[in-house]
Image (cartoon, rainbow, N blue to C red; front, side, top):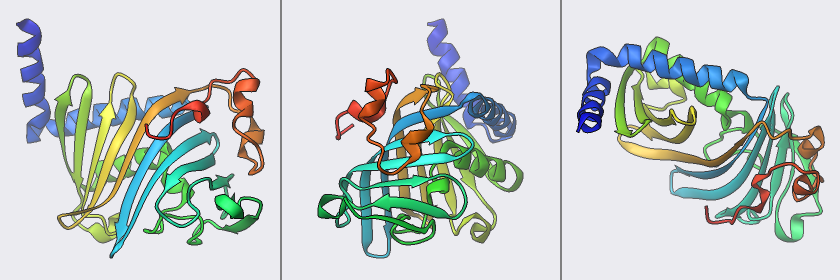
Length: 240
């Protein structure tokens, strides 16, 4: 009974507009501390977005290692030759990658803004990681109307509405879920007006497994991670 009363009070606290400021600052502070403690992480990324009549839906194995090395292996995708494609970003303005299927042998180096390396909305590799989520929330802390709502035990929904969407990549509302037991982002939605134009879900996190630098070379096979005794997202089924 006491736990139920506590949960109800917690929900009311986080829905209260006057209290959202302190609650948001606390959550962002803990998330920032968590990110600072991370050397590398892996997760399953389910990414969906739309641009006009185009829709993109992908299931991705996502690898990150500081300072900002990123690898994405697309397990399933709706674009031609998406499934089986991979890309690697190691800083700067370029991405090295290959498409799937019969195009796998052909590796290309392109601008990180090239359509081959971005989502259909033009999002780049370095707009897909935890650092980007922290930076978006820091922007909203300084500029936006923010409310925090408890969804369930230790998972909170942060809704951010900037006064000027033009200063937020044209996005009129960001909704981000933070799992405070993990102290990690697990879901987000971005809106243009009332329409959802982008979603991401991060799951099955593996933190500080000791990812080697060679993983961030396009021809490295992630299956070798387990052979090296490194816990890896590679063996997870494609649907999760």
